Length: 565
Image (tube, rainbow, N blue to C red; front, side):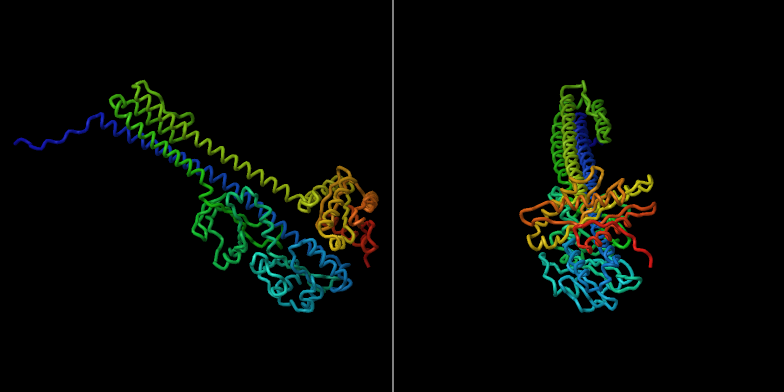
């Protein structure tokens, strides 16, 4: 029987080769596009992640330094027995309370309570005569130096003006025991406004970072939100926003979903506490919208895909004209495509001698590869430029973090490690070393009478005199408020006092058309033996400074140890 339905003829070899070759070209284009896109995505993520880690690290360092600086102020005051010997309500104590507020504008309340918890002296008289016995800062501060985590204002909520941001008033607590002659007589407490954190974040976040949508959040040890940008802290905390879940072992930044459902490139950094007492367990988190972070990658991927699809179409059309000579050449081109997929150095689509059509196809694919590589190189260049700009901004932040903005002198953060190194060299080489602690006399009167602008001119004048009159090897720093400190290598007590008196005479000779003249008091301490510590030098100079003020100001006093009774 004759089969009336013969099998259909298979497609011609030309058609088959055209279909096969066209498919290969499309796949090669897609593989190249995908491979380049993933490679660029990885590089952009790494570069953006490093930038976020730098931002979070800088914020962590500056916040930790601020916490420790406030704790050090409390620690320094409670260890001055001469301040407390006149009683907790003496004029000296009230002056010290005012000085703390002047040195730290974020301080909202400073007070001293007796051993029963009754406030004896306080900033502006707030809470004087009232009991703070049940407050954590009093209970903890009776035994040791205490730094308390963020909490809402209680007793002071109705006594202080509301926040400009509209958020509830919240405090950080600093306290310590006041002990005189071995007897506990009270507790010094300081409430610092949480607006301090917003000021810190504003200084450590470069304008370039804000333009990229980078934001900083702070979470406490329990993972609860305590700071968010744009005055959203309380609103988001009430909504239950918590620390994002970052996979354990993550190095750098990772894309995670946030409370608003959007994905963000996120980097977390633990608070770099300077001492256990100020380690509150905070986590500082920097984030950047993932869409912003990978915007350049998406654009490059779209361009690469369009080029790849156009090239694939051209290749498929040309393949039909030269299918009978393509077998060998297709294999060569497929191998080259695999090399390109594997990112083999110097890989390229080879030219063939089989036909003009195949040479055209090879040239088109080669041109596509060059454009894709060019697009990748251009994007890498943009990424490098952005990274360099952020690194430069962070380097400038590092310099600013060690320099007093008003006077241009070193600040305490930069001075303390320098003192430690210089003191170690002096002890090792058995050479003298002295410290001058300088304080402007009646500086508060200048501010009250002429305004803070004139007060700033006084501080800049003092800084200029110190720079001009001291040696190149001496180190000058602003210690806070109207207080300066000078480090004098190779200088004993006698030379230190002579230098101090010369400075006093020079400063007293300066005349200003507004405030007239101003004087300073100076305390001098000297490294006396191989066991003297930096804290001892500073404390002794501070005690000598207070003695100079007690003796009438506008004078210098050297440290004189108190003879044992």
